[in-house]
Structures are given as C-alpha cells and as structure tokens.
Image 1 (spheres, one colour):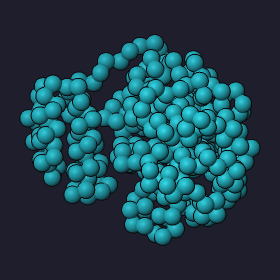
Image 2 (tube, rainbow, N blue to C red; image 1 turned 135 degrees about the vertical axis):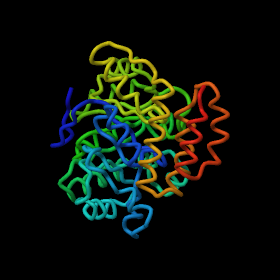
Image 3 (cartoon, one colour; image 1 turned 120 degrees about the vertical axis):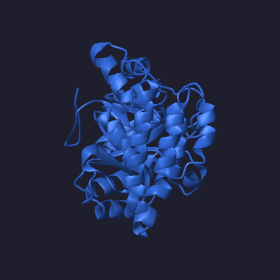
Image 4 (cartoon, helix red, strand yellow; image 1 turned 180 degrees about the vertical axis):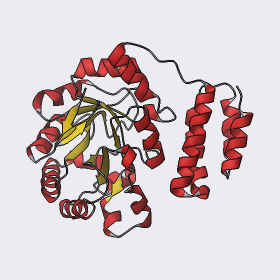
Length: 320
C-alpha cells in the first residue's frame, strides 16, 4: 500500500522512527534496503543549525538512496524553527518532522520535545509558522500526553492539523512513562477518528504480529518502528512479508548477521571516519548479536575494537 504525506508519495506503511545516536545515515540505508518506506533522521536541534554547530551539519546529511526521508527538528521557538527550516529547505530531505515527544530531561527542561505537549497554543504557532516557511510537508511526532493527568494527544493532533501539519505520529505513552510500561494504542485510534491527515502509530511494535494488531486495533495509516529495529533492520522485511502474504520469515542466520554488521561498519567508517565509525558500531554489535549463543562474550570484546580489521577478526572468531 502507498500513502501520501502532503505531496510526497510513500510506497509502503512502515517507517523507521528517529532515535538519537542510532538512526544515522548508515543505519537508515540498511533499513531502507530491508523495506522501510520512510526513514527519519536523528533529531536535529534548530539552535544547532542557527549557531552552525559542526556536529549538527553531519546530522543533516541524507543519501539519495534513502529517500524519501524525513528530517526531524526540535526546538520551541516558532520563529527560530521556521527560519531554520527555511535555511535547510534545500537539503536532501522530503518531509520535515517536528519533535514533540522526546522525554529526555535536558530537552524537556528547555521547553522542547514532549514539554510542548503542555503548550497547545505554542504547538499551533510552531506548526503554522514552519509549514508556511517551507514548501515541503511538515509533520509532528507527539505522545499521549505529558502525564496521565493531561492526556491531550487528540487535542494536540487536531491543533497541528488545523495549522498545516500533513501527518501526525502518535506514541502511546506519556512523557512521564518514558518507554516503561505498555504503550496505549487506543489513543492512536482516537486521534485517527478526529483528523483527516495520515496518522502513524508508534510504540511496542517488535514483531509482525504486533504490526498487524496495531493496524487492526487503531486503523492507523502507518507504523513507526524505532527500538524494535535496533540491531534488526530485517524487521521491515519480516513485517512487509507477513502483512502482504501472511508468511513468517525466519530470523536471519548468524552468517547474515555477521555480513550485515561488517557492511554497517564499513558504511559507518565511510560516513564518519574509522575512529568514530568503529566506536559507534560497538552498541550496534551488541544489539545485532543479542540472543545468539556466546553474544555476551562477544560484547565484552567489542569494546576493544578500533579498526575495520579488528571488527573483521572479531566476527571471524564469533561462531556460536
């Protein structure tokens, strides 16, 4: 199935969600190859763009082969967000997403991320100004509410739509919950009932069966997979196969996992240089190998690797 976000055609309904320190360019390329219809960048600070932060610039890089891609901005000042959106409009992204769901304390303390769930009027101003500033579709990612006493995803989603948002992603937890407990999918269905723009469901999709249940239970237009994709880019192929043909693909064998780790490592080095690229692979290797025999021993050795040769040697020795 396909869906439109604004004028952008998305050939499928599975999205790779934004994760700081995870969804960089190399990982997005791997997920796109496995069937993610739309991939999201790590969240990018609007103020980081304003002050020409060196690290921010690399977060804005998007390869042609990962498109369509959504770039996620965070901030709380409508004018800065609109001005920075305009400044980067010529970059290689297709959709601009505004983060209104990040629960991290330092972000919330600045009035950004999920703190915006407490400011419906400000949400309206942000979406209005940003969507008028650029010609690309603007979307928002929200939570159920800030806490259980202020569940207002329906209100926020409607405000976003009324001010020009082209789609909304709803994560079924409050900011207070972080990622604990169970995601409440009912709120996704409630948002779907009141807006006419596409609604993307998020939270606790770890298997193809989860994906089917979310679609059936909420009526959402698409599914965002974030933590379920860490070390598991194959989840997109598995869900697509299950939804389209009812077939359950097997878990990749260890040789496929090792090949993917090595390719991921090479892409990471190509994008970030060997020093940073290999060090950033350490956490990915832990995720890729979780659940395989001897993976604990491998994880201990992972912290010693510093070069591509070290990675190749480590993988040669890993034969569970």
